[in-house]
Amino acid sequence: MMIRALDAHCHADILMRHLPSFPNLYREMGCGCVTWAYLETAHSREEYIPYWNGLRNLCRAVESSESPFYYLVGIHPRSITEDMKSLPELPAELCESLAEHLRDPLCLGLGELGLDKGGRIEEQVLLWQLDWAVRHLPEAKRIGVHTPRQRKEEATRRTLDILDDFKPLASRLLIDHVTPALWPMVSEKPYWMGMTLQDGKVSLDELISFAAACPSFSDRIIVNSDGAKALSRPFLDFLRREELLDAECRRAVLRDNALRFYGLSLGRADDGLQCGSQINEGSDHEKR
Ligand SMILES: [Zn+2]
Image: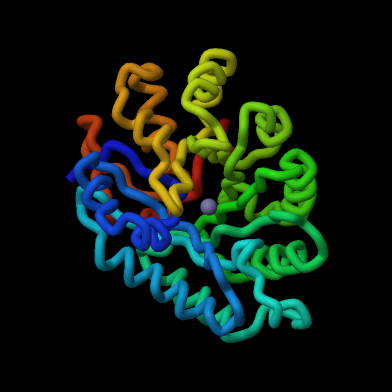
């Protein structure tokens, strides 16, 4: 079975609460998705493991060959609980759970990591997870990194500075919510970049004009929805309106770059892609 697109960043657990029928829509559109961990209201660190287990159960329950569902695990900067703040390191039980999830073929890596408001605690939790990844993240798994809406340039610069110290992870990192304004800063680095089509992030018009101004964007960009409380209208419009951008560019930013980044196997050569298994190869954009 073939898919038309892979929504490389969404929050399927939140979408399920607001729009339980959304997997049917994705299936009809031939779109798979990768749901990134974001525990909206976290009170205690004991909630992380059941939350990650829930993401796995959700993916198992709704995935289909027309619309595969995958997930990432980790601690989002807005999900850091009070009881994490005084700890000296990432608790062992969380490390064990991360390792266990990363053995599951549906779990594609760590995310959503990063800085949101910034500050010592957010940096600490990000560093713990990156340190853990350097030692334990399986070669085939990836890391999705958040950049915030507020003070975006400053927070992104700080994030990139932190990531400079984690060179062994470089080919496995995706910096997300990159905007055309951020492109010059982020594209200097060797990472994949996510561009989120959503009201308040990047509009469809901005994407189209950016594609015209910077044709090489389709080598590095993975378009996604970051859908959470609602589906992203601009993302769905982009998927439906096949006249937007040329076919090759559309395939790259909507599907092929995401499959390559996540190391998901390509299927038949007839423009169809077989979904399902994860292959053990590095992302290849570092060759460019
Ligand atoms: Zn997100």
